[in-house]
Image (cartoon, rainbow, N blue to C red; front, side):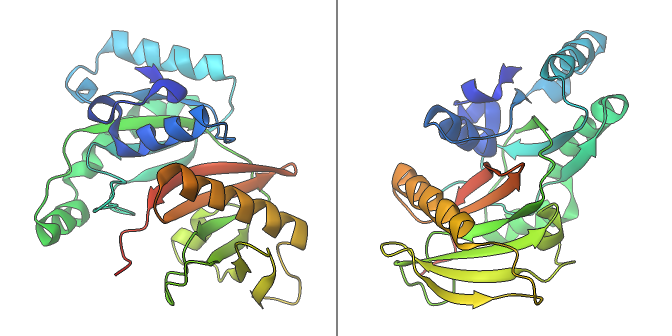
Length: 243
């Protein structure tokens, strides 16, 4: 078990955790957390459970997100986006059983089908336990337009509340296209009469996305959230669907 900011080794922390550690080390605002490293699922006992709950208590967080982090996840060629399970708003009394569910998701039919289609294996699975951000607004952003593949466009999708509503398709997002250099809003398609993001917020997200793209050295797909007027980066992965 390691703090999230030190989870740099993909073989022990998985691709998602290693990516978050890289973002933290580069100075991006990422919710605090820790990682139960690969192989621990074979050692879950009262001692490990006590260590996990102790780490949870030290975070002083009421609720956490529990996310799987496979060794092969969020790589340059295969993102595994949506193939493993994420559990939100988990309280202390449900933490251990939720971690076990995350380990089990590596063997789900969904993950098996993805692996078979790609001709790959997920590898071992670590688990991230991360403080929940009580977001007022959340969403995803692409550093390259995923449809037109215009490298000068950042595409931002936003919903009110948790970004899970966007990922699961249960909410229609506002969609914005922002020019990287001028920061001009090229497209502003609101889902209602009340746009979710203002110019200042769009500019902040765009600048962060451009910096993350520069850090990775390739196009990225980023999940973000605003809570109490502060922008958090929840995860980032390479875009693997471009030609």
